[in-house]
Image 1: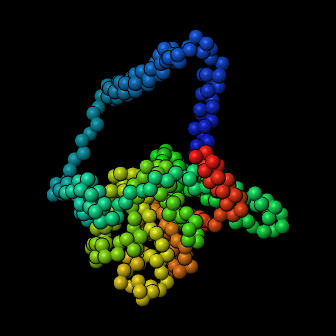
Image 2: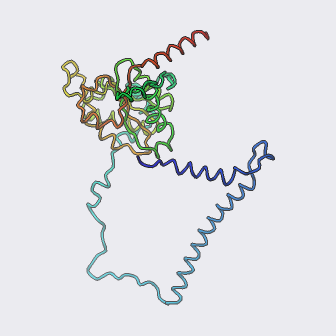
Image 3: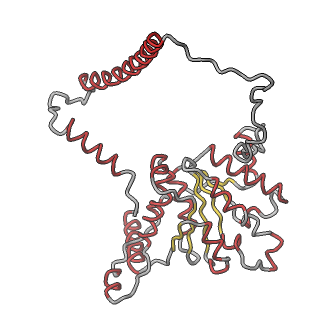
Length: 339
């Protein structure tokens, strides 16, 4: 396991507290006003650094002048040979490095792009659902089952913790997103009715993220053709970057990676995004707070190699166990009695 990037910050904060605040007498500072001496000390350090930079620059200039005076010579100017021209510049050396992605909507405002996505149903309003509304308890029998060589199923509390770790914290905090291991995509897999859709909306509610719906059923018939598909992806990810944090949701994501498309669904072209998703993941930078979330209840219908290559983290969302069902019933009865 790689060392935590937050440990050094915590140690520095702890040292600062011990050196400055632990033994400081604050009995006179009841209203907790600023300490003039601390402010002066901090500003002195800033001023000292500014003056030091200026003095260093002056000393370098003086040293250069002294060398010129001692040697009594000026740096010789390079002479050009006759019949040869100066370098006219390098042609054809830029290659792929100088190539940038073309902005297909450079002449349009973000507001107009946002409006278009809303009208097309690709940008939807997230339901007001908190993660705490996803009720679940610990797997109290987990240790007992492991003692008899049985690996227990994950509990709903485990699911809630993983959603917080991989989804809510990185999207909600830019600093956590830059320092923590980068998770660009997340898959929620489980049987129908266990709350996968609820968890997607909970991520958006807790982080204030925009919710883009790129499910195969939702994009069917929209932006047809290869050019239209490129425009749709461009619109979604341009707005997602400008108005981050953003969640790109693909419901029934196994359809995007079908082994064989059923005859009834061929008209909808469910595999339109299959080739583009790996490329989009490579384009996401550490400062892009964009998370691709897929939900599925039939992962075995997908071509597993490309399916697992797209989703970095796969979270199994099981049916509630006894502890979770009991906790849910207790909370329901308690809330009913209070009414």
